[in-house]
Length: 524
Image 1 (cartoon, rainbow, N blue to C red):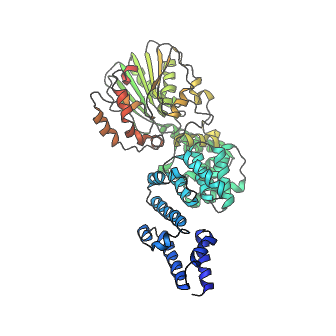
Image 2 (image 1 turned 135 degrees about the horizontal axis):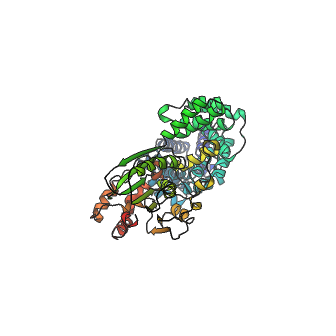
Image 3 (image 1 turned 30 degrees about the vertical axis):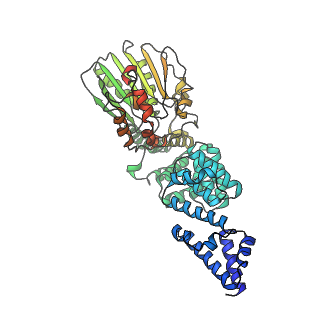
């Protein structure tokens, strides 16, 4: 190798790894002869190879005269850390990445990008935003712009999300997912979408066969009067993946097309599929009604001396759409028996159902019947868009009715539960929440206590405040530790709200449970 070839090899390597040319050239030319220089470059090539293959052991075993050179040591430390960080990312060791690198906030952009993605994967969206801001202040990067936008979507910051999706597309116009999401947010924000943009959206959504994209497209088309296209696209979604909102969209589309028979068919389909219901006749004069936060019945094993009704909303509308239908079903059961007392319980989203249905029960049953309501960590301000409610069902619900308001048209009082009149005879409602869970604390600021309304604040850092109040009697601390350390949370909203961390809250759960007054039955 002659000197010109050597110089070219060195410069190529420098450009590839973004090293300081002057420092590296000086390090190499300090060698006594060309052979030493060639040996040095060969070692650099090996370093590059081992970095690219994440072979840390071989990297550390290289000639110390090369890797300990004062001109090379800083670079070696950086690239070695970079290689390790990328290996951790490939192995999905996200917590390890943040423990090792995040606190030091490396100047190395590649390590920052790894920390950014690790934060996103761990659902630490605020941290992801902070790191993204640092990276984007130094260089444009479409992937980091997309991560920033996704974090903003998760945090309900749609204006910011739109801005960073646009930035990502400006950097890389070939991005597909970012373009689709930007158009969807534009529809939510009421920004005019052109016919050509809708056609391009359709081409992408159908080509990718992504149900979520096809659904968003169909709702946009319906809102823009493209009823035939909207119907056709909803039909592209497999029947088992269709939702109540899809049926509501078809109801509206066929009505606008004056096909009233098909419209009525899908209206009935939406109603029939909007909730699940189970009645247990235990031959009692008390009735317990439990509104679940998931599509599965909750508190089925809770011991309480009463007839029982279990309800689960499957409309994904936080009981806004289904509550009147549920009320009609319940009132039929009540009409068959003379209940002296009705107890209503709602968990999280189920709290919305408990509040709405219990209000209708109070207004439509004998006032001699005592009605008591307990809601755990419920949501209060549903509409307009509430940035405080950071879980997927809520984001989708708000997205759909923003894209196409015709899907669901209800009075604003149904969307803001604080505006309901709770002052009724023989009616009492207790709101229970944890003072260490910010989302729930914020929601409870909208509720004012009164003769009929009480608030119970627990020293608890989780969203599942029903847990400590519904544990069977006689459990020890070790029992709880064993029970909740093995808890497998599968419901997406609860996972997003920290459900998988219940095992770390055993101390708080046990402190509440130790107090014999802290039982659900106390408040019913």
